[in-house]
Amino acid sequence: MKLHNTLTRKTEEFKPLDTSKVRVYSCGPTVYDHIHIGNLSAYIYADLLRRVLQASGYEVQQVMNYTDVDDKTIRRSAEDFPDESPEEALRKLTDKYKQIFENDIVAVGIDVPSIQFVSAVGSIEGMRALITDLYKDGFAYIADDGVYFSIDKYKADGKKYGQLLKLDDSNTSKARISNDEYDKESVHDFALWKTRKGEEPAWEFELDGHDLTGRPGWHIECSVMSVNNLGQPFDIHTGGVDNIFPHHENEIAQSTAGKGDMYAKYFVHNEHMLVDGKKMAKSAKNFYTLQDVREKGYEPLVFRLMVLQSHYRNQSNFTWENLEAAQTRLQDIRAWADLRYQPSADTMPNELDQLFKSTREGILNALQNDLNTPEALAVLGKLMNYMSTIPIPGVEGKYTDGTLGFLDEVFGLDISNRPDITKEQKDTMAKRQQARDDKNFAASDKLRDELKEQGIGVRDTAHGQVWYRL
Image 1 (cartoon, rainbow, N blue to C red):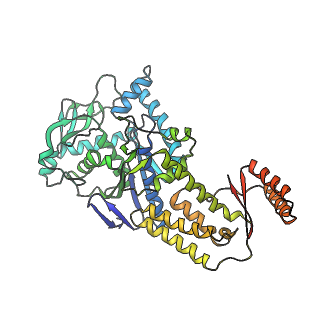
Image 2 (image 1 turned 90 degrees about the vertical axis):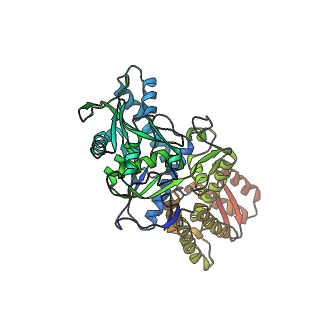
């Protein structure tokens, strides 16, 4: 299996640190609002990665964090729950959006039971311990508003700051940055811990005789949540390209200061999703949520397929036209999957058995080549196109009891669990076939219309009737 590693800027053969288990950390949501579909695409790609690793024979431990304390969650919780204590307001807000997030990712086919969720608020003790170690080792210092990481001390220790992208003295600033998120290109010492300001939620913390009651900075949260649950180093860190700097770069620094050089062996980053050719962002107010997709009449799995139609390292472009095309494609895949319920044909091409096998192999090979989903879907399309030229009812059932399960395993489109039509509908089809045999076409048309009213279409072939869902 090959993956593009942001650390090396190369597509490499994947070699896990431990052959018994692959350990994956995925940067999760900041739970203060609905996530937009650009963020959602990152979680779909992380889910895809886990699925392909498992299909390749690996056991996978995937950890995903909830950022449930930061500038955004504190500000929003005070607005939404002004009558609650800061701590209770924060809990109510983040619990609400954690549940909304999980509902959203379930709807787009992400296998939630396979993910171990951890929260920042539940990991405070580990953050205080890491900050204490960094301070004792000389990589952190106390300022008037908290504790900061010293990039100069890190580099003086022989470590490289700028492992994921090129950073040099020309874009290094001596200033400190206390914000949890910043988009500037210049490098700053960043906050590990912030002392309490006004009516904010806060946790006790004493360091070197200083009362630092307050809360953690953003970057320290992921370092602790990843390492405490996966160990250090772990295999793969996932996230969007917008996390590369400063977030992931700062994670590497604070996690390797005074320690070994490796935090995670592979960093796998997905590109931005654009909206009508422009970067999607809440600040630009050009974003959509999954609820917007639903309100337009599209089911969430259509969005998943639209995401998978683009390679994760290429920018994708969200338009309603592209979503409509994905819906048509998903309908075609489902109609093909429903062939397993059709009446069996007397004769079937001998080459189909090998064709189904080679299709499964071709799909897995494409996905093992740096998660090449466009190529994998093209391989499936070739099989579907071939079968449409036959067409032979029942061929899916004879040859591919395992194929649909395999497709769900790797793509997560839930096509193997679709139900058969009812016994009554099958009886109606049988009556219609008898009417056609008797050349009673008026009766045949009437029965066809009855099925149509129930959402079932019928196509007549040389091998008999084939039904499909409308």
